[in-house]
Image (tube, rainbow, N blue to C red; front, side, top):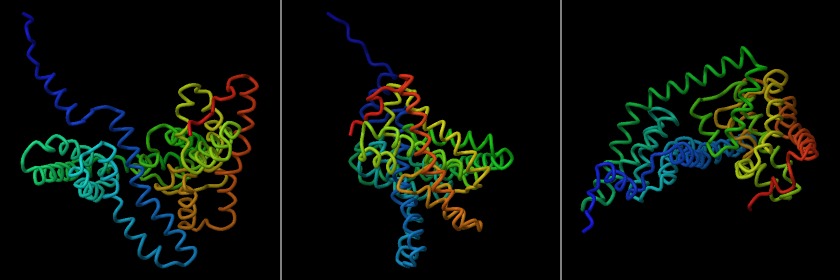
Length: 352
């Protein structure tokens, strides 16, 4: 007779994690969770900022006095439920994550909400439907673990990320040319990758001219990919990428990485122009969004007006750096690469 092999503790652990849909991986935590965190931010703080700006310009008190404070104050809760959804949490865990996100955000900012929600949600998934008192045990464990992590880890990590953001902003002030290129290119590439540049900028509390360079780089990626792929995708593709996300082109980058060169080169140009010539500033909310919903542009307007740099020159700078230069330069670089056969017909086709 064939001898049966007893499962090892490692096998039992792996079986338990698989049954609970807990996947300890970069994909699950740094891509899925962070991407959904960005959606939570957009559905609360970012859209609230847009509506607040519109309300302020058009003198609509309902937008500035009612919606904006609610959207701002509920951003942590939105982050929590969004991350829990991204981690495929069961209902009781997901609803409890609202409290974790709010607590984590209050104690350690967006990064506090991010870490607290991930750990609290995973612990909640572990105990979910394991007892007859599930309706009590699952939310209790989820909330206690999440808030405890937010209380202990949130302030420390939040302070570190804020300090790192301050260092980046200070370095950009000292070396506006070099840092203008680096910040614009790196944050712009993060926008296109399946990670959240918006969440990263929020975690870093990125502001000032560093945020201005980041906004320029993200806009170069979005507008650049939109116009360079017009022949394959038409106006629908232009709108989806230019106002939505350049992340749609990740499959094309995987197939031919050279398609990433034109918008990245343009970002390397608009970044230092933003820091040296136009001295554009931005906000943490808009820095990693580019032209998505025009959040980056609204953020630039708010930041510039806050320091007394508003007016026609500000709008000219936004128009040139975020729209016109990418529209003009990206196709020139792309056409050169097409002639060299580095980019071929169909390389930029979207599966829409």
